[in-house]
Length: 623
Image (cartoon, rainbow, N blue to C red; front, side):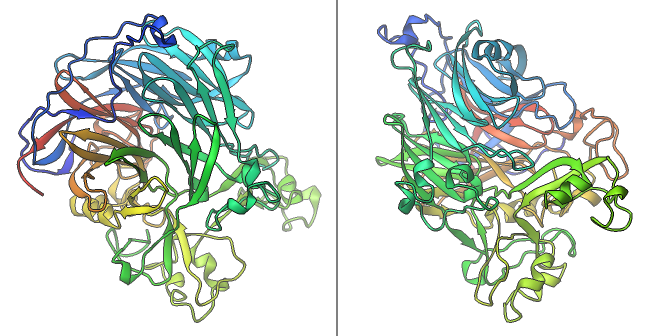
């Protein structure tokens, strides 16, 4: 492998931390239901506290490969439990949770066992689809599992970490996409995305499930509540509280509760409050956990790409190559965060977000005639002979893609509806500028004074507890990645052939910040940001939330190695067999932990199916 990173020679230092890791208390509160389970925790040596002033660097320890076919979500979400001293990894391909042990000498991961989710389906009495998320703390392992029909109610399954036996299942909302345990193990929460079916005939509500385990784990003792957003619907009792900037963009007739799609969440230290990312809505919901109530919904606003902002982006995959940075007047991005995390400083909770961005495109397979009859957009092979709907008898019965709803369009597609006096009019017809960029398309006409919006902010942000912006990294991620990997900047995560992957994602969402984790180490607070498309982990010191300081970037990806053992002429995987020499592809999640007197992060890489462990060390050099 050929890791590339902004770094200097690293001198190892023992670090002391708290934050991302759960507190190993040996579950010794004899009155708690958790203590009554009798789960014995491992003796884990945390790192000692030392003073450090250098930059924080990452060094790869080792990777575990699932062995599954390429790009099958075989290492999606990873969670470390200090009680069992193990990693738990969502293997969506096998519908299992892989349990990884860590070597004593260096914390290298190897597979120890797995949790088969079939027993949970039987206990819940439903047919299940994939597992979407896992959270492990205090010897408990919570798993979010979607129903076989995604729009049906999913479930949360809870397991013991010592023998991996099923403790209980709890009904969740539609498509539970993320699950988290509170630090004390009392609450389990899931963010239920409620994504519609491709034909948009079934659009369930988004919701949040809260399971209170204070009185026990069984169905008759645990308190399960579903937090809904129906009061914010038009005509609802809280409709007036919905901020104007919350983006409601589903097809006509979609209610607010259906349109809101919880993606990810984070809790404060005592588990009393949750912040929920509503990604497609460019918003955040704040939840009162104890009362299972939506405290408020906050619009996250926009990020300007104009010259006054100082922000620049490479907006085209058809320009002169990677790194064609520019600012544009009346162009802005919506933050649309995916993963969020939190930390506390001076009695204030801060939320850190990876601003991926996400459009709505609902696709299903049907015949062209059925697609036309539904007044949807045919996106497959044109089977009609004389033109659409000219003669129904000339349609074939073959099925292909049909789009029931889409809210994005390229700049060139917007050209005709933008006023001639708009400052971006010419740029929208220029491949070197904005013709290729994907925009939010929700207006029939765009006036000269209107702002155009793209997806995501290509950054990470820090918000206060009221979801007000404290800091945004601007174009720092893109500029630093380009400085290190100029020939493969804004690459896709399924191709390593430079001629095909370089600049590939510039017209989409760039490096695509996806995963984020926060840890406090030696009194300093660090954010780890995973770049889903480009690959690699960015590290920032966020001890001063208003002025974060970049630390390092490491990408365990070798662009010179093909992604599979056989690829086609475009560098695409041709045999579904991942090539380990390619390294990590598609970081989806990050979890911090401390053991054996050292500090680590584990990264789940969705495309390569690898779970990688990195050691954290301080360098004396300042970048």
